[in-house]
Structures are given as structure tokens and as C-alpha cells.
Image 1 (cartoon, one colour):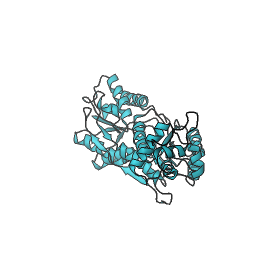
Image 2: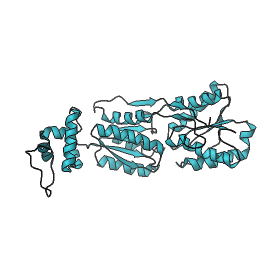
Image 3: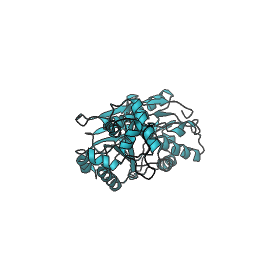
Image 4: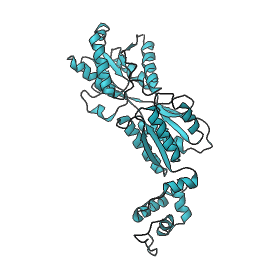
Length: 346
């Protein structure tokens, strides 16, 4: 804070002009900072941030949005919050958004199309710069998405309602091929456990990756019968029930299944529990592979072989899409390859 600039009275609301005076900068420069300008030097940004902290200044984001026609907020709508995949992607999105002078507003649809609609309308009212959305597997809000895209940019994360959109996601066919090929190299043709169809096209793409990899190897795909009416994100319980029913049928013994590849790591946890209930040891009596490499994979027993998504690249790409100039009309579509992580389960 400039030594010859008096500090505002504790009883007086701090203004942007106060910040400029205290930092020894013009109000225009400070305004550029709060408007998300990338032209400012890093040292200038640091000075403004330190001065704001000293003065306890918080900008009126609503006033900024009225002037600009939109705010420095980026909306995020997720189907679940307590999920390691989304938590890690959010971390990377937040880091990149803050570096660009933006803030995330995170809402949860709870995998309900009506709640998703309400969340999208809330973000519209907030005049967000754009929105990152993992869409509910429903056509209910298709028209709303089309309407919103005329007002703000939307990028879909992992799940979308139609292919003509901006999206960032894992290359699911590539990652599932990695897992199947590895298990085949170990001498076992794996069966496949799919997740409930709550995230499209990821659900369909991982199944396709498994099926194609098996067929290329001259193997018959062995897909565990799923409850198609279940749209729950409680993957562990779903897998425990589904795999327990499959084991009870005796099909796995008839087909001499020696390995199981699961569409997510959380599914693998439930599936391993089902095998333990019949006295079989995962990693020994049957090999297991998951998908995602959530943090717990390294610490469960046996540690889980899996496909690691590039969550940093995915999260950063989502924000990059929203920071593009308004005149950019080409669809932003990115698929990122995964890497194989080999651990004790296979």
C-alpha cells in the first residue's frame, strides 16, 4: 500500500478506486484485472491481489456482470459431488479458472433432469461466462441446451446429449483397449462389467472398446448381464449385487473366466467384494482391472490395476474452451488418451 495514500475508514465501504489509490495504479488498470484481462503483467496482478487482501476488498460481481453483460463466473453442473473423479477434475478446472481471473460456481443435478434444468436456469440468471456440464442421460433438456448456447458457451464433460457440441473427455475406446490387451497378454480373456447408463457416451464407448478389443483378438466378448433399469451412481452397491447374481448363475465357471475388467474403479470395488463373499481372492483366483485410477486404487487390497485418465488435461481443456474468444465458432472437441497402471490385482 502506498505510504502517502490514507487507508479507507473502517466504516467506509472499500471501492475499486481505493484499491487503485492504495496500489499506486490507475482505476483502469485495476478494472482490467477484475474484468479478466490477460494483458496485465504478473507483478501487477500480484500487487492488486495483495492490495485487495490488505483492504479486504471484494468486488461486486453482480455489478460487473451488469456492465459486461456477463460475470467472471464459470458455472459447473455435475451429477454427483462426492465422487473422486469429479473432485480431481474440479481441482484442475479451479486452478486454471483462477489463473484467468474467473471463479467457479458448482451446482449438482443429483442425476435428475429437472434439477439439472433448474441449475442451468440459475446459471443463466447469474450471467456466467460459460458452463461446464456433465449432462444427465436424458433428452429432457436438449432444447434448453440449444437455447442457452445462443447466450453462452457450454462445454460438456464426460457426458453429452448430442454429438454436435463442445466436449472434453477421456478416449474411452483407447483406454478400454489398453486394459483388455493387457489382460489378454496375461493369458486371460476378461469378462466385462459395465456401469449403469448414467453417463453417455462414456458408457457406450467403454463397452465398444472392450468388445472391439476382444473381437480383434479372436475372443468372444463376455458381458455380465446388467440391470438396464438402474440409473444409480452408487456403483459399489450396484456391482456387488450384479456380480453376485452372475456368480450365482455359475456362468463364470462355465466360461472359465480368469479376469474381469470393470468400467470404473468403483465398480471393481463392489465386484471384488462379491468374489470375496464366495471365498475367492481377487488378484489370485481372478484378475481385476478398473478404470479411472481414483486415489484409493493404490491403497486397497489388492492394489488395483487400472487405466489412468489425464484429469489435469481434461479439466484444463474445459476451461480453455470457455476462455476462447466469442467469435470462435468451431466446435471444441477433445479426447485424451489414458495410461495403463499395473498393480497387484492383475
